[in-house]
Length: 430
Figure 1 (cartoon, rainbow, N blue to C red):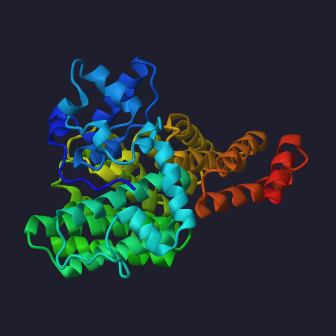
Figure 2 (cartoon, rainbow, N blue to C red):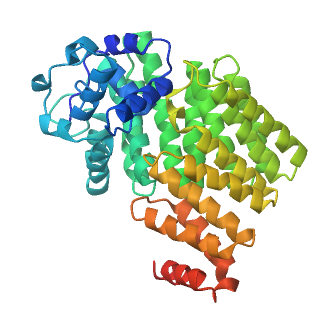
């Protein structure tokens, strides 16, 4: 396991300039394409570099950065010499998914203590090292890194195999908060990190069908936000609570949570966050059957989204692009019974999604299959369903499997079609 950073990479942060992490990640991907490299750069990767967690990039990123900043060596970009970084063999992997696979195996094979060490890098009961009496910057950075690692694993593989093993890092993070810190700035970082970790673990519970657990974790994140006066964390917690309420069949609660999130987010300067919260609200209105209110919220969402990314966009929102906007709108039209319209948006979502987010590609394709089945296009639905089954060899998500099962039930009356019959047979055997 790589060592945790001693200090942030301020040089790289200055090179990013006024671009948001998401905008700068897009520039990195564009530069890679110009020289024929393939990198899955997103806002989270930029955050890991700037926090100092990535002390030296792999060779693919090194070539891309050399193209972006001609004449500058790695040291000029704030990185450590390659030979000074431990675990050089890990640096030779060409893309972040390799690291994701290593971390996934750690989650799959290890017990809770192993996973806590793999994700947080903190001393645990039973270690020969003594735990610090007070948490410092290293512990705060470790909590932040745990959040990024869990999100990376979820993007690639889904939540089912991760949820229970992610609970231990969360308990460790709150134990650090309870131990106290010597600086207010460190305490603020720990509160923010622990709260974001609670949201992430809540999402793993949510996506794996453990709704009561998810509700508890989201409430814990909200309480942490209120105690620390963190409006960004509060908005994030309310956004996920709105999503959960919709999935639990409580649309009015979904609307209220989204509106509360919007109030928290007003002063943050992130139109994309306001767009996402408007989409959450639209989903609630759709669940209530209020088409007019739903359309008004959708219009707000598109207006805010069109303002583009901003430096104030939260790091956790790297998943929210045009593909996610299309998907969330698709769910609104599906809830209102307009499945052909919903299918058009779901198809655009699947087409637009970066393959790096394998879980979302599977989700959007599952939404497409379900809407096509309900819109009277059984053969197309069966094709999309087969594509989802291909993706489920890599992605583990109870939510997606449940959606696919519902699609299969909808297609049963059309089983005499060769394509539908083949899909139903494959689904039943799986």
